[in-house]
Each structure stands twice: as C-alpha cells, then as structure tokens.
Length: 155
Ligand code: SF4
Ligand code: SF4
Image 1 (cartoon, rainbow, N blue to C red):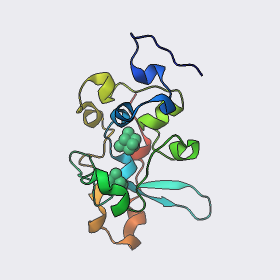
Image 2 (cartoon, protein in one colour; image 1 turned 90 degrees about the horizontal axis):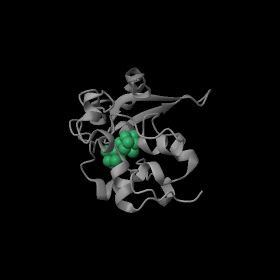
Image 3 (cartoon, rainbow, N blue to C red; image 1 turned 135 degrees about the horizontal axis):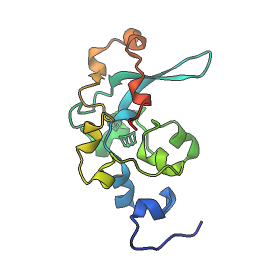
Image 4 (tube, protein in one colour; image 1 turned 135 degrees about the vertical axis):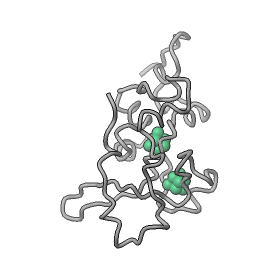
C-alpha cells in the first residue's frame, strides 16, 4: 500500500505500523497498561484469560513501566511489540497497535485524539486503581484474579 501524504491527516491515519518512525511508534501507545497484566491460558481450550494482577515493574497509578529501557532484560515475559500479526492479535482488543493493525483507527480516549494523557484513565481503559501487583499474589492464586474488564471498552 502506498503512503498517503495528505498533510491534513494525522500520521496514524495515513501510515501503516511498518511506515511509522520510532517517535511515532512510541507515541501510539495509549499508556493503558493492559499489556502488563498477567494472563492465564487454559491448557485444554487455549483460551487466554486476563487477570487483574500486574507486572511488578508497572506503576499502577501512572500505568507506565518503571524501567522501560531495561524492561526486556528484567522481565523475560515482557513483550517487544512489533508488526508481527500474531503478536498484535494477542494484545488487548483496545490496544492502539492492534486497532491500527486491524484498520479500526484510534478511539476517542486515545491521548493522540483527545489531546490529554488522562483520557485513557477517565474512560476506564487503563489499569489505574484496578490492578494489584504480582508481588502481592501467590502464583497458585492467580486464577482467582481472572477478570473481564481488560477485554471491554466503552462505546
Ligand atoms: S495495551 Fe497497547 S496501548 Fe496499552 S499500554 Fe500496552 S502497548 Fe500501550
Ligand atoms: S516490564 Fe514494564 S512494560 Fe514489560 S510487562 Fe512489566 S511493566 Fe509492562
């Protein structure tokens, strides 16, 4: 697909993920923190369940990683998000990278659309005040923390 060079339209509407530069790519993250929640996979069905339990490096108020530059060294399960279709489809339905990859554009709560970093929190998309840290949960109790809200989005 050729690149639309219309200067009136923002980059996330005219570029594919692969066409974005590093700054544009980073700005695409809405800061929700949902991808930092621990998930459980049903061994029989392959179904993936979200929990309210977050990675220990996540700041549960700002919903930002507290060691972003070293995250991959410190947390082996941390995702390096790229243009891989399978990886993108494993991200939360609301994730900006997944939305762009699926042609759904950015939602009204996305900071690039709203102009405010707080809109993702106000819309209830982020994990702010909804997550608990993995250091406070025994691994054997993870299943008791399965929740549906990371799969939901407001209209
Ligand atoms: S789910 Fe997507 S938009 Fe939300 S923090 Fe993770 S990478 Fe960013
Ligand atoms: S290391 Fe950082 S980015 Fe990775 S899952 Fe943990 S909090 Fe999220």
